[in-house]
Image 1 (tube, rainbow, N blue to C red):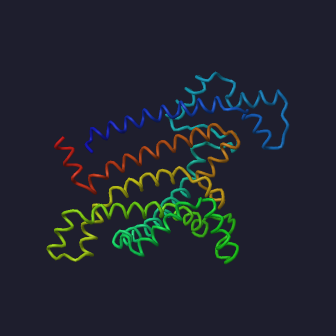
Image 2: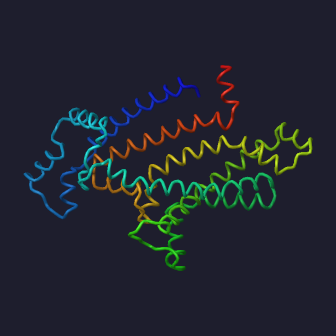
Image 3: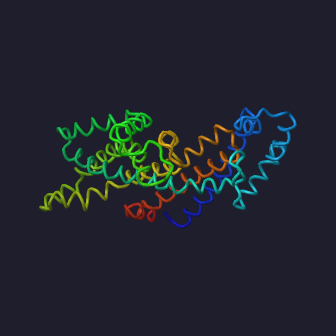
Length: 315
């Protein structure tokens, strides 16, 4: 990907972010319910009309739509995403506080996924239509079919209640609090990744360059490691980019089950309390993550497959 194309993509990201911000602001504006009333209701208070009007004024809800949007947009461009209606803290600080746990969960679950799926995918491809392949494919079907919330509850029951190895709920963030949520996410992702690795290896394993390497007497292990695996990486890189974007946006169901302090848990609480500034900031974060990771994946293609760069030059 050339510098000109990267600049074009960056401009596209900026345009899309403006569109996402306007759409998100419009949807929160049109959403039913009154955030001011919800705020009092969450605190167990029955508000009077005067209290509601005062709260709406302090929240800026009494201003026209376009005035509210452009005020919010100008503040966003200055790095101010607003203040949470219910937590009474800056949205940027709330997102930042939840970012590190989310990043740790995302990378640990991806690491577990790669450790499980790459060897299984290679074994399934090498022993195609044999017993090992049938067993691995059966496990992947099982992994894809099981809902994440059910897997999470099952892991909690086994390791927290029966074996008493993990805490059910922990107020302290640490490795033990990270293991079960990461394992829950890795089980579902490993099933998809294993099938992808198997398909990619099978596509490469019978190509002419592999047959030629075998004819020259090169060992199968060397052919697999030095030739087949590098050429099978592109589909896996694309899948990794999509998974990382999804994980960095937060995995709400898993985070709620394990009381994990991530972005997904924060987003669910924001929707439940109609915390519009927090919802808008979260959606912007998701959009920026997905597009940025997609750009990084596209740039990385030519480093894993130099032929892509040569095709661009010829074009």
